[in-house]
Length: 209
Image (cartoon, rainbow, N blue to C red; front, side, top):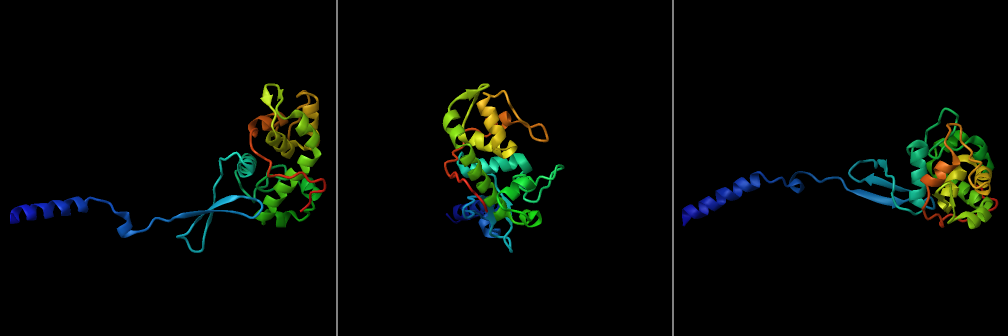
C-alpha cells in the first residue's frame, strides 16, 4: 500500500513538472477596448504597461466605425501624422482647402490632435451628405458599371474626390469618373466602401468644427 501511494505521488510530481501554468509565474496583459466620444473610434490599451500605451485596432464591422477605419487604413494606414507627397494631411489625408472649409486653419495643430482629426472626418461626411442628399435618394440601390450604389460608397467617393465630382459620376451614369492625384478614381471608392451603415452621419448644411 505504501509503495502504491509513493508511486502515485511520484507520477503527480512528474506531471505537474511538465505542465505550464502561466498563472503561477506571471499574468498576461489584458486589453481594454473603449470608444472615443462622438468619433466612435476603437482603441486597445494594454493595462500592464505604465503609463498606458494606445495601440491602433482597425475594426471590421459594417457600422460607422468600420467605415471610417476602413477609409483611414486605405488613406494612411491609420497614421494621424502622415503627410503625403502632395501635402495631404493626417489619418484621413485632408487637403488644406478642405480643412479650411470646415473651419480648421492650423494644420500643425491638426496633425497633433487625433480627436480633431476624427471630428473633422465626421464633419466632412456630414457636409457631403447634405450636399449629396438628393443624389443619395435617387441613386442608392441602382447599379452603375456593375457596381451597386450605396450611401457609404457615395460618402467615401466624396471624401476622395469631392461631392461635386461624385455628382458628376452619378448623373452621368458613370461616364464622368474623376481621379485623385494618384490616379485613384471615384468608381473604385464607390465599390470598395460599399455596404457600410452610415446612418450615424447626420446631414448638415453648414457643418463646421
